[in-house]
Length: 474
Ligand SMILES: C[S@@+](CC[C@H](N)C(=O)[O-])C[C@H]1O[C@@H](n2cnc3c(N)ncnc32)[C@H](O)[C@@H]1O
Image (cartoon, rainbow, N blue to C red; front, side, top):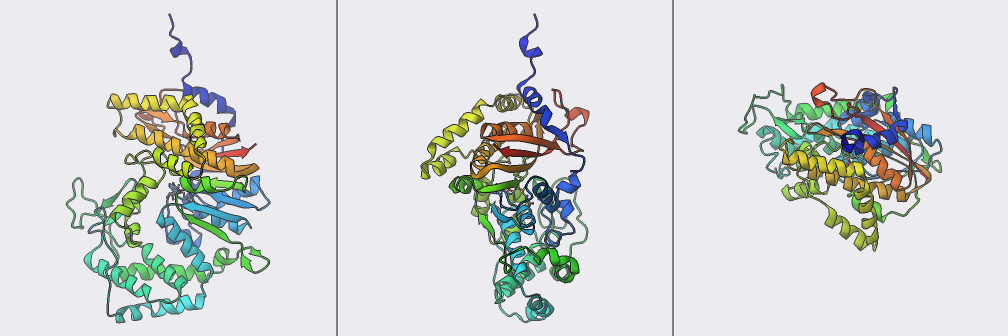
């Protein structure tokens, strides 16, 4: 007798079949267009590369295509603010939520640049090294945490402390911000480290005891060299005729640029506090479910911004779960909703999550693979489970606060663990439908990754999709 489970497609494949008509390969949206790489001609992104970002052109493309009349836009995972500034440039009122101080710092710098008298900046930069050398007292600003200890050559660290002491003496807060940003954006170059996926990679010249093949990151610039280079780049870009894109913003009543609102905090906490039916458009890219740890990758920048061990550890736990270290946030979510008198929402969201067969299948399979020791970390099932649960809450909230007819565009990658594909695009689109979105399109970027035969999943589709989903509120 044939067993039914052999002839019935599995739950993820069923979901695939359900959404098959919406999946379209988008030839015009290749990786380069979507990712931060397309930003490299834009001043601020050229100065500090936030590789997790998407591109301004992607944002402008979707806004123009789906919603040509400017209104209110939200990015709940704002990063360095690509969506906010691109939309502002098209005349939108932009709102962003971001939890990582790194993105907030970059956004603030961009804002500072819009209100800075260029002359003043030039004068400060011209006198910089002279004034710097005359500085007598120097305070300790860089307080390392264990994962950044000995990251800088001793002389560089002294210069960093002196530079930050000097910056604090600059009266104009906007000029101060830009100067602090210049050093912030060269921290990787002047250190013994290189950002490398989940961790920092350490050069053989550092004082650390390192195992494995020695890593040589090449020439390490001195602090003065790197900051001078960065400031030259900045001044050159700001003085070039193309830099008008940074300042030439559509105005409110012909005077002030359209204001932009940036909230530092977790969208899991901020979204439930927002009114419903407010936004015309949401464009966002949450962290991917890929174990990438923002707090380790940006540890040097966090320390530079004054974050200590406890703050970095707490930050890691507050970010959307996407590393194996993340613990579950259900108690926290209960507290958030309870404080707003909206506890019934927790049950409603949990019910959508628990009723997704593809989600349950994914969680069950990962648990089983774990028992069979087929995952390279025991916490992968917990991470995946919580990643989707937290995004389920986020999608519920996005559906609530967007106006009927409004669009939500989300950029995200699928992932694979223990050989099993996790169709992030389909599961999140299923949640979106349950919360009142119509799934208009799931654009698949032309070249997926990881389609080698060993990595292929054991059902139907084999390529790991990288997608842009377009949902419209009914
Ligand atoms: C893929 S990046 C978005 C990058 C952004 N699109 C850009 O162009 O810069 C995801 C962002 O979500 C942020 N994030 C993670 N958890 C968050 C949370 N709970 N609330 C708000 N932001 C969060 C991360 O710090 C990260 O900057």
